[in-house]
Length: 171
Image (cartoon, rainbow, N blue to C red; front, side):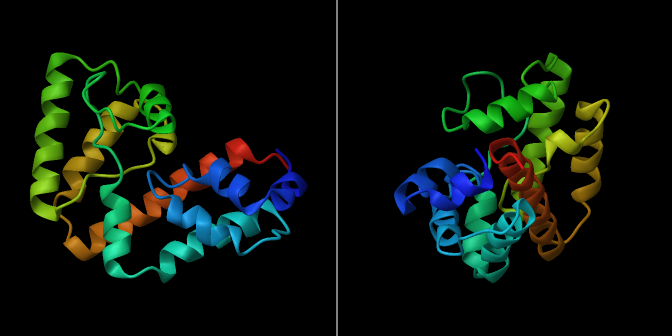
């Protein structure tokens, strides 16, 4: 879809097309629709990101909580969106050994226990050996503060959203 096509969508069609950019949070697409027309993909990304920045603390926390835990075995998380399933699969998180699964499970539980939200990372930016990098980040970020982790999770979510927008909108 081109930017001209994005700008020409009806409000309902826009929301339907972009409601999954931020995981299970169509309210963001509903607000972004009102910021059209977009002059560039960067302007569109900035419009979406500004909605998050302007949201109150509870909306930000709910957005993070709408994201799935990483490394679940196939079929365990029925709320896993198609985008998340593809992204996790691309990082090999759908093909964990029993030992890797146990490590992810333990770190996810520790993280959620400490911060009250799932660990979020843009797995598509994890590079080579993404499972090892993600596990290292999970361990490192467990030493953070709740405020810093919310900020980091939101930055990771913006990175995820940016890549998803780039997948949908061709310039």
